[in-house]
Image (tube, rainbow, N blue to C red; front, side, top):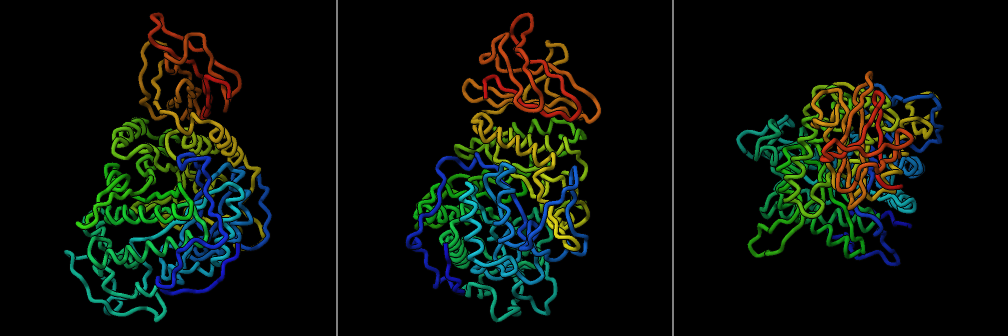
Amino acid sequence: MTITERQISSVREIDLSPKQGKTYWADASREWREEFIYFLLVDRFHDDLDRMPTTVPGRQKGYGDAEQLRKRCGGTLRGITRHLDYIRDLGCTALWLSPVFENNDTCYHGYAIENYLNVDPRFGSKQDLAELVEKAHEFGIKVFLDIVLHHSGDNWSYPGDYDYYYYQGAVFPFCEWRSDEIPVPVELRNPELYWRKGRIRNFDAYPETREGDFAGLKSFKNDASPEGLLVQQILTKVHCYWIRETDVDGFRIDAVKHMGEEMVSQFCSHVREYAYLLGKKDFFLFGELVGPEEMYNRYIGPKTSVVVEDKAIYFGLNSVLDFPLYHILADVVRGISRPQKLIERYESLRENAMSRGEFGEFLVTFIDNHDQVGQTFKKRFGHEASEDQIIAGIGFLLCALGTPCIYYGTEQGFEGAGTEDYNVRESMFSLEGSPVSALSKSGRIYQQIAALAKIRMKSPVLKFGRMYMRKQSMDGEIFTLPTFEKCLLAFSRVLYDHEMVIAYNSSLTEEDQEYVRVDPSLNPQGSVFNFIYGQSGSVNVLTNEEGSRHFIKLRLAPAQFVILSNKPM
């Protein structure tokens, strides 16, 4: 596919008619809840150089020291395109790219946009993005763009160019644009489209967190005012343009809780409607929302318009990132936190899913993240986890409810940690010396995650089944859910008459032997569960003397992760 690299600067220049001769890609063979997402920072994955993967046995460390990671490292869109096989062979079916639009010069991560109508030249061109999407589609991989609707880059200043802070909703004067050429589109060069209320102090206080600036990044109006509705129209048309131009398959929307739910719902509905016009019937929209789970219900599912003349129902996000699980799972897997909160997490998910439509339980799950706002010490999951624990953590995501997402470098055992976010945003390629990268397919963590992903890909049970946390017993009589830090954690996925049991020993030093409950209506005494991962052989279904409880006996080595099935795979 060839794209004419004509630079446009106004939404009036945007053509949203389907491209002539173009068949837009839509994989009707799978739903979004079946995806396994690979999330990467474009600047940190791979550059344009020919590099050899390192052959050091065992886990790897990311490249770059503190000084280098504060700045651009040089990753490009072409670098990703040339190494899509690395993502495919890991078992990932979708690729989430950090923001690709043109950013302020000092920004490497993409969240400070100055030109919404151009790919950042440091990453490549519009043609490079389209070719990346096209090649990914040839591999059966969907591509999601990270987009920012709440704020733009630091494209203008307050008087004196001082740091202004939110104060009781006061509107501060606009001083000047930092350049005669930004922001783009030119329709955003209107001071009335911005709240102009200074930096957020309290990220949990409303309306401050909705109207304030993210540090120096300037927040747009995002309410039902004429100015807010105009911003929505501009940003909707801009992002539909990128669907038309590059054939992307979804958006991850940044900072959702900082915008009104009506604005988010209308944006999502309008984008979906445009995607339908192109034949893309499963355009995926998921959001970053750090807050209590009850808040999710305001952004997922149907909303009525706040405009009196508009009686339509708008459908918001398909899903959000599961931050409550993220804040719990790592410590449970490492055996340093009791599993009660994890068990409670799934109960909360069940209760709240009733308000979120057919797929309300299926949030985007993750155990590692690039953005750890509010944490004084940032750390990757691998910072204090063994190889076995990393495998078990990703294995849990692949087998539990939700759409699993892996953060780049986790599959190599990256261990980044420090007081700043750049400490967990290591480069996957060398920034000095020999031309090498960390894109090795021979490491144990990479290979075991790939094996687990293959099991999930082939298993309807692990993608669609109901989930039950399983009670356990030492004697086959008294069954309880686990309560100790170092424990055997087990759950089942059940799809009609097919049950799969997933179990993990969170102790690094002690073997654990337990009886684990299974569904009695599906598994009569003497029937068999076969190991399909982590161990060979099978176990028989046992019952207590009264026949009221059906269970299997598991004996797991330290940090062992296993999957069993009551039917052949």
